Amino acid sequence: MTQFSRRDFLNLAGVSLAGMLAPKQLHSLRTADSAQPNIIIILLDAFSAKHLSLYGYPRSTTPNIDAFAQYSTVFHQHYSAGNFTTTGTASMLTGMLPWKHRAINYGGLVRSELAHNNPYSLLGDDYFRFAFSQNPWPDRLMGQYYAEIDRFLPPSAYSLAQDTQLIEIFKNDRALASIAMEDFLLPAQESALPGSSLLGYLYKSRTLHNAAAKQTLAYSSNGIPEIMDPGYLIPYLNENVYDGVFAELSTLAAKNQPYFAYFHLYSPHYPYRAHNNYRKLFRADGYRPPEKPAHPFAGGFTEDFLLGQRALYDRQIAQVDDEFGKLISQLDRSGVLQNSYLIFTSDHGELFERGFVGHGFQFMYEPVLHIPLIIHAPQQISREDVFALTSNIDILPTILSLAGKEFVPDLDGEILPGFGGGGDEARPIFSMVAVDNTAFHPIQKAVISMRKRDHKLIAYLGYDQKMTQPFELYDLKNDPQELSNLALKQTGILTAMQDELFAYLNAANQPFIQK
Picture 1 (cartoon, rainbow, N blue to C red):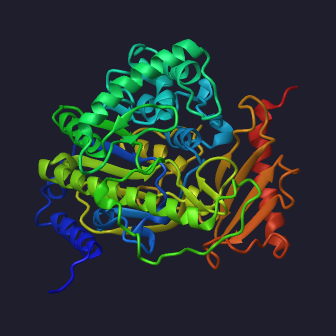
Picture 2: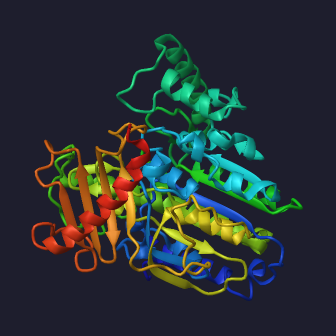
C-alpha cells in the first residue's frame, strides 16, 4: 500500500482550497458590486514570513495560506516598523514611523496629538468600525480612540475566561483600564511587580480559578488550551477564536453599511502550544538552518534548544494555517468576501538564532522584521506578486485609498504598489526598537534597521559598552541569512547609509530637543 504522509495531506489540502477558490466556484469573487468596499484586516501576532512555505521556507507550514495566495496579491519584501507588538502595531495603525508616533516602550501609547491618525477616525461614520485584539497592547492603543469604534470587543472575547477581565468593567476608558490591569494587577513583563500585592493576588487567584474550571472542561485528546503569556491569564482555543471571527464577519456582512474590521489574533505567539495532532509534525524532517554566531545581547541558548523551539513554533503555525483555511472556506461559502478587501499580515516576526528565542529586545534581523502581507481584492481570481520594498506603515494610506478617502499629509507611509502606489525603489525602509529610550526625549538609545535596495544597515545607538561593532551591514540579495557583516569591507555603502539614516533621525528628533 502506498504511504500517505501528513505532508502529502497538507499539500493536497492546499490544492483543495485552491480548487474551492477557483473562479467557477467562488461566487464571492464573481459578483462583487460597485458599493463602497468592506475592509478586513486579519493579523496574526509574531508571524514571521521567514517561517512560511509561501515565502520559500523548507517546511510545509502554510498550505492553506499558500492556496489563498493564488487568488491574492503577495508582497515579498514587507517589513514591520518595529520588532515587538506595541511599536509594530502602532506603526501600522498610524501610518507613521516609531520616531514620530512614539509608542516605543512596552505597552506605550501614541502621542496624543497624533492619535487621530488611525483607520477608525479617518474612515469616519461612512463605515461601521469593528475592533478586536487578543493581545492587550493593541487593545490599549485602540483605546485612545475608543469613541470612534462602533463595536470594540475585549481581549477575552472568544476565550475561556470571558468574565474575568477587569478591562470590561471600564468600557469607556479602555486605555486606562489596560494600564490599570497590567501595571497595577497583572504585570505582563516577568520582571515587573504589581502595584498592589494584595489586589494583584486576589485578582490573579480569581482569574486562575475561573480559567482552571473552564480549561478542565476544554481539555481533550487535542491537548490543553493556549494561554496568553506571561501576565495575561486568558486561556483560549484557536478553533473558538476563528469561529468567533467568522461569526463577527457574518454579522457585519448583514449590515446595510460598509465596514472596517480589525482582528488581532494572538497565536502563534509564545507559548507555542499546538494541539496534540501537530506534536509530531516536523520532528524527523532533518531540517537544520545555518548556525549563526551568538549575539552580545543573547541569553546563550544552545543550538539544540533553538531547534526545538523552532519546531514548536512551526507546529503552531501549521495549526493556525489550518484554522485560517477553514475560515476562508466559510467566508467564501457565505459570500462575506463579495465586496471586501481582506488584508492578511502580522505585527512582527519571531527569531530562533544567535542564542536568542522570541522577539523584541535589541534584535533586528530578518526573521523578526520580515512579515507576510497578502491582500485579496473583490473579483480577484489570479495571483499578483509584488517585490518592491514595503512597510506596514503603508497599510493605513492604502486603506484610505481603497475607501476613497483623502490622503493625510502627516503619514509617513505610501499607498502600496498594486493598489494605486508606484513603489519607489530608492525608498529606505526603517524599523526601530527603542524600549530603553524615553518616549518624550530625542532617540539616543535604540537599534535601528534601514533597508535600502539590497542592503540592510543595523545601527546600535547608545550601546557602546555592549557592542564592539555598533554597525552591521548585509547584502540580503547575496546573503539572505545575514551571515556576513560587510561593515568593515564595504565602507562606501556603509557611510552613505549611515548619513541617510542619521539625516532622517536628526529630523525626527527636532521636536523633542529642549530649547
